[in-house]
Length: 280
Image 1 (cartoon, rainbow, N blue to C red):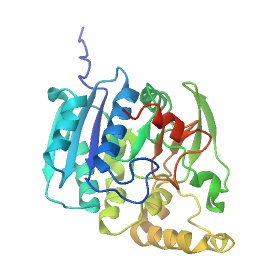
Image 2: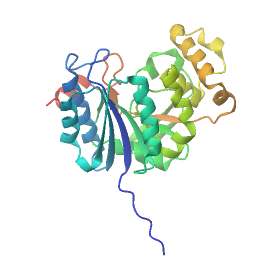
Image 3: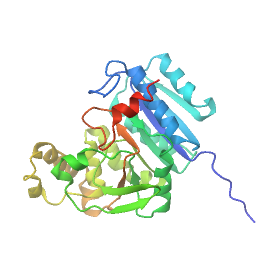
């Protein structure tokens, strides 16, 4: 009888980090290092007992950022790649290539450096992904945009699994979980981001929400942005629109993580209270 060896890692994370503050985070708005440590520590605590391979893209980061990752992850689990300020678009493209080339795990995760995670909840995403055939992508982030904009006024499926409700949504950001196989099939859609596509446009191309009725967009009060999303989505992905699969993206309710930018935090939770209890 052939015995199947268990993979060493439950998932592989491609984590990109930049040493400057972007936008307006709800804490440490003038100290990216402290913000980075807060977010990284929260990710580590959220992983719990999961075995994660960390591939870190340090874009123009000083040496103390290397020490930061070594503080929270074992050396054997780390692959540190130092970059000379190549920028957001290039590092996302590198994430795609690195996650496709690695052989540490079938489950892969794209991570940005400004997300705060709730402890011991990351594994719920992996279980949800692996147990449901109609789940292609999972975001940890129950985005406020899903409730704030009329663009997201569509019929959505709901599932209950692993102590969470899960909602089928149109879009998210560029922090998400999937499988290596799914990423291989969809890589060209994601790579359009490096050529100027929006993250929102990428997701609408994949999920196919609101891409076939442009007249519907004109009744939305937020129409300028979403019309741009519509145009870019067709410009970069018309073949996917017409002939590609409709992929399913899911997010948890309540959330597992939040973007820490002040205008984007996930609803229902008192984030400042939660974060202040875990700042140091």
